Figure 1: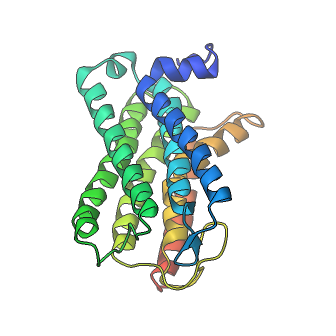
Figure 2: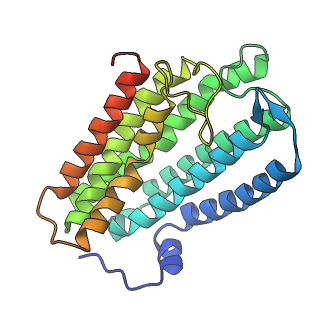
Figure 3: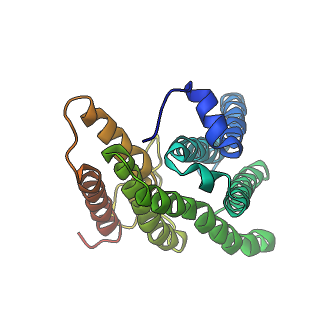
Length: 252
């Protein structure tokens, strides 16, 4: 049975030091980008210049922290395995590449996604797509191994939601990468909320890994979770995500 006796910060550093430190760097970058956003009035395509890098740094920091938190449910032998640590380092390298790409494009006043004008960014775009798939695959690796060793319904909720995050995010993101969203988006996320915009579905897909465990933890404060709660919550969130994707594709 997993114990939760160590203070949160020490537990994160103990279970997933690289991911925890990466999250700290990204949060610091988010602070810098927030200051840039407040001090620099420039815009790009009707959006504040530094808003997109800020969204990425915040989302990637949350991603790293969620993986670091969930690492406590992984077997100690796995966390100490050489292949697992190499794989984690590759995931972190892909996270760094994504952030550098988006921030660098913003600093140059260029479009990072759907850029068909700058040869360098045209060449980099598919490479960043591969990096995105690799970093997202961590949810499948975590989910598979947590599911194999799950003791509690909370752990099963984490496992199923992580697996769903990968299964939902990759195809939705691949579809979105080939179809820029139409029109000017609405604050704060920039969604258009009209057919053709898959960003709401992408948001739901990527945040299954936080939403489902949080829902399970909240329910556990009220009732004793019956077996299958994690799978049921994941199925419900997945259905909502698929409905948003169907709407974004114009099927609804």
